Image (cartoon, rainbow, N blue to C red; front, side):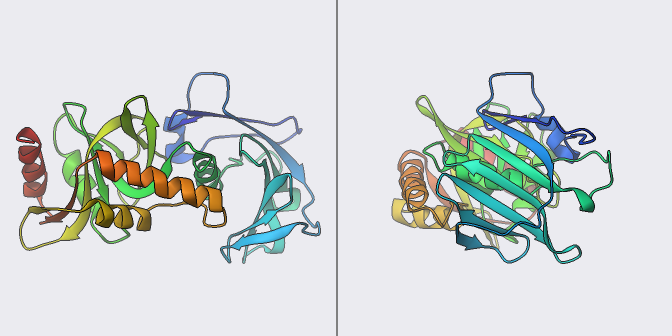
Length: 288
């Protein structure tokens, strides 16, 4: 599986454990390559006593423990009871791990995706925080010239609305309508599609160089308001997904986002929810 130029290998030697990528994530299957991350899936009896220090608790469905040499995620469901249905253990760099599935909860030979959301995004968030990039709450669109437009906003800001409007334009690729990964590659800042889509269920494994960053705001007309670098950095951080339990990860995220706003023009986009918003942006791009 390839997400944001990371190759992730998932395998199992357990009899009766059939692995299968599900849903839109199938778009991210790729050719065999040397993996950046290797994960072994196993059956397990997860009535174990939890060890280490709890460093984050999302409530339901997951908690994270620091066990010294590794990190361990516990996943529970109120419909199943207190015993975790899945436990995932990773090394400190998040390049090697094991996923244990609680055998009594799963029918034998039922196809399973061990990295079922939110584990796949948790893995990438922590992998990126090792100096490799940042996951942000955004819609990403690549136009016919290959330019990348990043539309940043929390839930309800209009990401899905804009994604559907851009989808109607020729030569446009929607990388995601909800989650975009940002990475430095050579002299360019790149945005990558992810499998973690929004209501429009739009996702692509492609990438594009970021040419503009737009922070979404509904308005009475289409207009762009330039933002200061400090304001843009604060807004971008508010829509990012850093590992808040990691001081090093937070420091890297902040410095990375500072580089983004220093090198890429950032605007507040106040827009009307119709095709005129896309036409407005493309016209501005022509004269930029």
